[in-house]
Amino acid sequence: MKIIILAPENDSHTLSIKWALEHAGYEVVCWAGLAWDQERQASLFLGDDVEVILGKHTVEPGDVVWIRRPEQPLPNPDVSEADKKFAETEYRSFYLNIAYLLERLPVWVINRYSASRMINNKSVQLLVARDCGLLIPGALMSNEPPAVKDFLAQRENRRTIYKSFSPHIWNKQSTHAVAVTRAAELSRKQLPADHVLTYAPGIYQEMVLKQFDVRMVLMGSRIYSYSVRTPKDDLDWRYDAAKGKAVIDRIVTPTDVEKSVLAFARQFGVCFGSLDFAVDMNGKWWFLEINEQGQFLWLDQANPELRVLEKFCSFITAAEGSTQPLEEREGLFPSLAEYQQMTVPTAVAGSPQYVSTEP
View 1 (cartoon, helix red, strand yellow):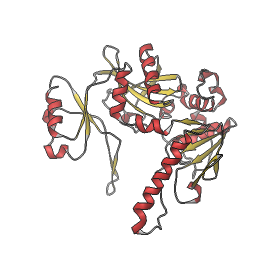
View 2 (tube, rainbow, N blue to C red; view 1 turned 90 degrees about the vertical axis):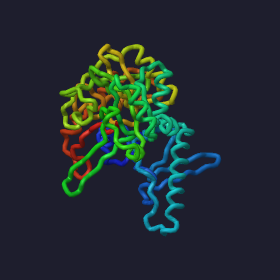
View 3 (cartoon, rainbow, N blue to C red; view 1 turned 180 degrees about the horizontal axis):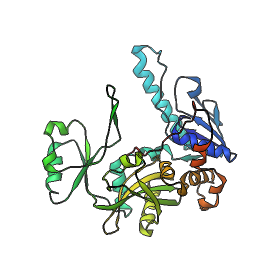
View 4 (cartoon, rainbow, N blue to C red; view 1 turned 30 degrees about the vertical axis):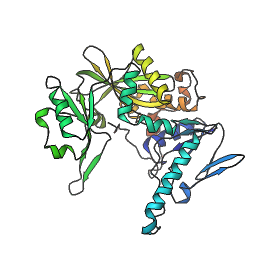
């Protein structure tokens, strides 16, 4: 068995996890995604037998394929201008053929591409979460000014927020200033002109008046929940987490929430993901969203006692569907702190910061 990670080798999570797995004796290879250069080329052989070759690596029965964060398909830049659109379409189509075919092979794919395509839609997340028994805040997703204004007007006595569908960063080269999308409280009086509301669709949601946030990590049938507290209990805790100001502690997941989350995962067919909850003043857990390949090593940076890296390594090297407690094998793997303390070539590793940048 070998572990194939679909991500660039210099991806922060890939670097440390690959090192930890190899330290424990596992074979780990990386494929950054489909492209024209030799390292990222691929071949599918279909006949009496099926063979999948990703770069220099053949996918074999019993392998584990972690679809971490592959780069977008990249055609040869020398293709003629008239053929660029055709080449881009062919590269995208070929990558989809690879991703979907992996699901049909005798390998464990984390997560299956078809499942990730579905679960990464926030509207579907909320609907399935509700149907599985999780509490969800009322929400509107829209680019229609009257609908946005009506949604906020009907909730004048309740606090509401705006957030984007996906994270984005703006860089101002002249000053090196950076602007990042963040969830923000929004009232009817703060709305811009109607035409501005059509510039980009948005998510408008009832605010949960919270005690604290929860980042939950799903690994197979195991669920690990961590409270996230910031100095001012900010609406969006990611900014403080990026500065190392968030306090992270392991907490017990309520039985009903755990049951609903596992049902939610089964509905989508995923075995791994990072979920966000808000816990209100009455102790109720409100589902906000899931990122099926969300960042998680920043938890270990904030609190090394959590040993999330070791748990993930234990999970990815166990048999698919194993119910063995991850804690029984996590001692086989070194910690994130050990990785950061070791001496490695600066051109390859450095000291990456593991910050959650998803909404």
